Length: 566
Image (cartoon, rainbow, N blue to C red; front, side, top):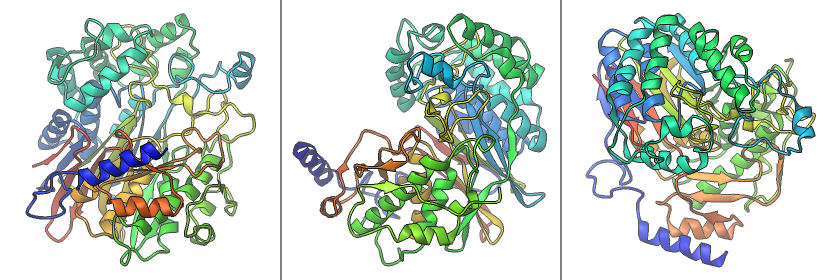
């Protein structure tokens, strides 16, 4: 332990600011300036996907059209975090109705698989790869539902750029190549993976041109046949036959029964700004609960990166995540005290549990009962529509199960279920698992201000809170807010919610850029402080500048991405 602390201290003392320190404007840790454009904006984690989205906007497409086109491209170009074998969530600001809409595009567990089956076969947890964690992919259904409501251009036109890149090839970018190569040894044992996602047994190198003709065929099928071509046609049969041949449970009948759901976004007000998330089965409410707790402190007098800042943030996270583990699940199967969790009075109760030293043990609270790896992208169009969209296979490239000839990998989101009878997130047939991927949105006085997201498992609600605080409490601009060094607390309540309390205090992972004085002060408060190799997420954002009537875009330096507009 002492060696780890000394190594961390050396890293912090040598590193200085997180990024280039020779900028003549703004914060030293910013990687680039914000991007400004008068008509439209797209921000994704891959520059070619961003350009596809901008092209769609220039052709008269809506923000939803651009988001679908960019998401399709990311499924090809960044299969380490996305693809049509995964799920999708979105928040849409519709300029015509001046209203936010939410879509929960998460799929359900196979109806032929039961909790009793896992118990009979000796499983205490659902494995992260292979056939057992596979649930229905909800992405394609979400595309068509969003397009039916807000789209303008034909779906085949939105998918066409990705089809061309899939046939002609695209150069793989640096970070994506890194994660792709790391996935190959884990997943090549599963049928169809090596054949479709390696060349000579290896993942692509940085800059290597990559093709995926199978995915091109699949996307062309969707462009011609629509949503049902995926859920009720040949594709569904191929998936069902493939899973049955490889000891899986997901069937063509499970796919045919799937429908996503329009949901009402939920919010809390943080210092005059309404921060919006989607309700469970996702974890967005944890971000709102953290903000409610932190609102009780005056961060105008607490500096960014200070001991007090990191300590209060970490302790608020522990409290919110204890409730996350206890209560968050598919609301069709579990009663969720949503209003209670978002109550300011409940936040005040939880805030009283934060002391001067690190809490080692945190239990879930008792909110009042109600009466009732990943990509993120955001788009905005000339009419004022905005989209906050997040999509994932879970665990990078997902389950490793790559159905024959289709060019994509099925997600492993079912790993998030627990195998504990009676738990709200316990496995059941036809149930949606607890979800980590969450889009976010911020309004001010009922008007759209910010569409943003932070990728990365349990980092996501923590990242959302840090972005909001960086912008509102610490006065950073849109790019600086994403580039600022991040905090991630890891504790025993991650990742599946099997534990409802934290017993060891967890660890505070501090990204390069925090001072040694902060590290030392946190350790004196009893925190276990360490550093890690890249768990700090990835961020994209678009904001509306009402005064100047322009879009502002940001894409952080931790990913390969780009914000661009016209």
